[in-house]
Every structure is written in C-alpha cells, then in structure tokens.
Image (cartoon, rainbow, N blue to C red; front, side):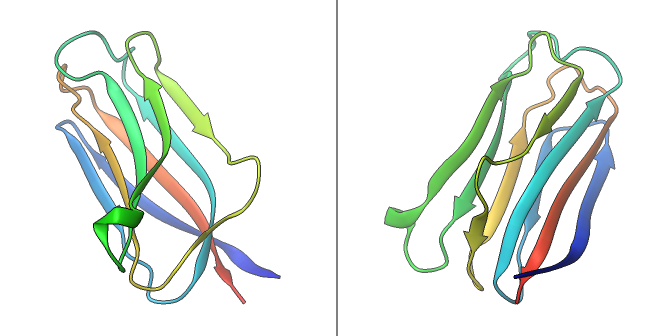
Length: 112
C-alpha cells in the first residue's frame, strides 16, 4: 500500500541536476518536465532519471532517458511501481544547453 502523493520540485534556467534522497522507502509515481521551448540541440540533449544505489555503484540503474531535441513537455509514469530504498538517490539530469526555463516535478509516495 502507498501513501499520499508527495512532490519534489525544481525550477530554473540552467542545467538540471536535481536529486531526491528519500528518508524512508518510497515508490516513484511520475516525472513531469516543462520547458519554455523545445529542448533544441545545444549540448547533451538527453533527460535522464537514474537510481544511484546507496549500497554500491554496481547497482545504479538508469530508469528513463528521453532525447529532448524536439520535446517541450514530458510526462513519464513507470509501467509498474518502482521501489526506492532508504539511502538510494533518484538523480534527474538534463544539460539544458539552451538555458530554457524549466519546471520539474517528481511525484512519489511513501511505501507504507
């Protein structure tokens, strides 16, 4: 069973390097990103969501990757719940080489 939805938010106009570090086990619900224009082709164009394992780097895994060249709005919802353990970190990265304004929301729930 999962608790109520909790947002993790970030905004800006530079590279996205946002980390969500849960203090209890959680389930990743969705990731939403809005850019002020399409991503363009300046610099690294991949938006990625990765679990950085708190146990060992050998367990790190990329959960999602999207080429943002022609994307302005992104919504990703895993097909199945993704459990994230206490001590793991969810890293959200996008170079944003065109320095577009962005709004990022990561929605998660406590795994109760």
